[in-house]
Image 1: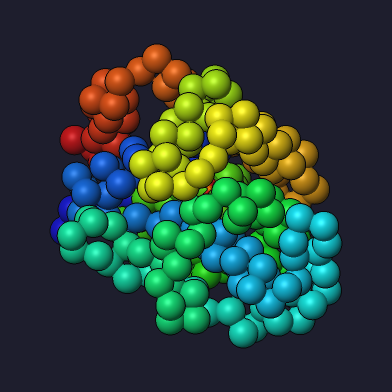
Image 2: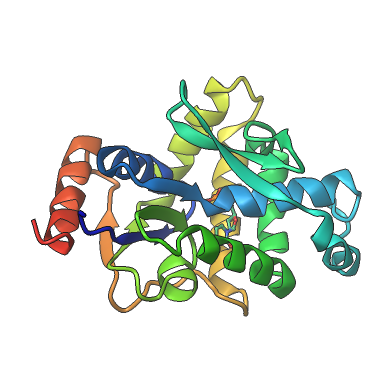
Length: 230
Ligand code: DC
């Protein structure tokens, strides 16, 4: 049987982690897990229950209610990736709004939330053959991953990508707001106490500010092939 590895992709927001992760998973026939979607879905739940808004956060109530949150992924053939379900409802689109983006870093800083999601992520990856992207995959979730990538790009490039994505979805946003959100999330994600966004010692850094998708994919695939002994 062909050897299977674990690929951990971390980095700042909107650095194209999910794009490369999806490409790799498709090429290798691996499972792809977007862990940011899991933190976003918990945030959406907290918003629906009125535990969090721009002006308040009742984290105690969210913690008590965590057992009532069931997250699952279901592969969508036409999209070519797995969509996330919150208590059996497809929330793939709802979790990408700027409202969720504004609050998610606060929810992701709660240790009880992280404990729940990290253990679910480790369970999904126990048989390897997985590409997972997030902020703590190479440092906390899979510290023994065979390949760890750390993605970066300038804040301006990242905000431009996210802005175009939101406009394409039909969301009404302005560029300044998106840029502010990207920078603010990076600040909270990098400075939180529990599992901050840091580069693992053995990660390979990719600054894709000026790198095309094809070049990036080819370079990363050659790293994968080395790990696979090919
Ligand atoms: O990848 P994303 O932008 O969809 O992630 C949303 C937020 O979730 C991000 O700002 C920080 C948090 N997150 C995290 O703390 N740990 C992860 N493994 C993935 C995401």
